[in-house]
Length: 106
Length: 122
Image (cartoon, rainbow over all chains, first blue to last red; front, side, top):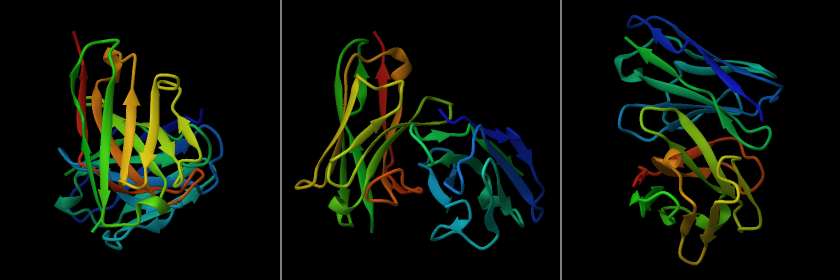
């Protein structure tokens, strides 16, 4: 099983500042990685697929990068509505696995 | 618009069975792979199972293999999760989600239901 490790567990960022979230895979997953946003009491929403393709409805301040074992989700200018828990998920091998999440707060 | 509506959750005793349903609308159901993902109270996301667009293949998390069965009825636009031999650790909100791919590993889950809560307790 591929283990996905996210860091930090909690990220505190001032409004307008950059937020950088990390996701590391225990073995290479190529670019088979997605990011999700989950706000309190809501279902997750797809933010990024294929490591860097932004999903419909997410503004350009969200970007994904990386390949192999190291991935990054960047929110270039944090807005209050971006407060949420963010999860990564690998799609390279069964079973599909999620990281433990990063909570982004203001 | 895409809608996924789960149902069937509730309180069930350990060792008993429960079937979840997910009614899909707003898209051509029989062309998408579908998955179940769960979230224990206050915890992170855990992938549970996937079924290909035609029901031709299924994969499961180790934690549920042999106890849970994913299935679909494309004539009814409905996804199912049959859960048996339930344990306390199966307590979670269960989400159905649409895969970006019809089959295979896929590349993301682009639509999610609101979830249904399953509580396993005596």
